[in-house]
Length: 199
Image (cartoon, rainbow, N blue to C red; front, side, top):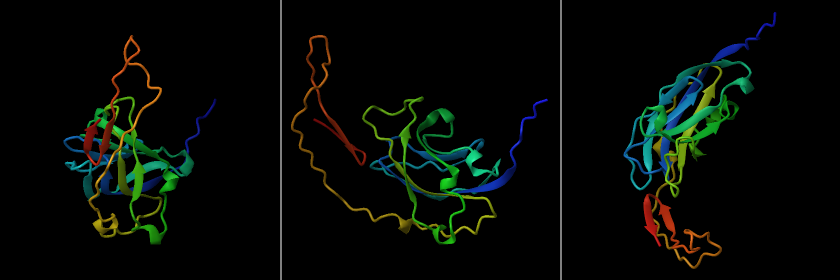
């Protein structure tokens, strides 16, 4: 008889500190969900202003039962979602567990990581000109008893300043035709910080 091997498992602890989201797709509100296999945590929903979302939240630690060999562990997914339903996941990022496993003591309260999101093309919830955005978060995975949680510090984010964007549009070349006659009426859309303009 062929015996299916069962890998040795252990209990891990996942810790998620959420800071901000930049250039986030404009929706009424946005949550962040972090999952590994069947285990997950989801943040509170926050309203956005100028494509900026501010969670500033320590999510509850959650345990993950997974193989001792870290390379056999499921990937960690970070989702931007409009509510708690799976079909509302607007975009995502995928991380390997070894990237965040057992951070050294001097990095337990490090600055948040900038996570570039990708559109979930299976759901196709972004308009063609929408950008998936960035999430600033500190994700930590512990294979031992996790240390006490440090005080959340919103001062780890860069101070925000006002800028003025100037766009000078000159020409386009070799643009595809938009109708059977071979002509087109092209225009450009520009998005930045929740604002949009059309040429």
